[in-house]
Length: 226
Image (cartoon, rainbow, N blue to C red):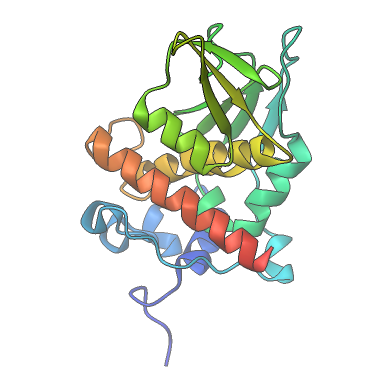
């Protein structure tokens, strides 16, 4: 019996759609009626992602990765090949709809601008200062929790007037790959699989919650199968 569109895995649906970029959406079994991730309905429920087979990898369309020169005194913790390898690892269900990933100078002098999604389908990763970072004041509770969970060492100095953030070993590298890049991919998936490319489909709180869960799941899947 032929498999129906109701039961085809997301990985297969996305791969089919990548082979039919200019067909109507229903031609590749990715119509709005049978959305691959059903994000709007499930509000962030992410199923376990299955890494693609070697046969699939050859057909995965990876978005172009453009690297702009980093400003003097700044750097990119990850490079083009690492980004491509990570996206190929997770397969077409995350690469579908992504057009471009840019490594660019930061939009301001702030150290804590890591990345952004520009809909439809562009992710920007910002250059960073080499650690340790000496920041004015104290970090917000959410920012401190996010960085420390990723492995950063945070210390308040001068009676709370400044904060030192250091990244031992490969923690900053992994933070940018998963907590920044795959976090923004999570935002992209919400937009892509609900058919609304330019307008927000969830409240900011729900959008962020989905992206956080997606990034954590990606880190766990890569640690298990990578």
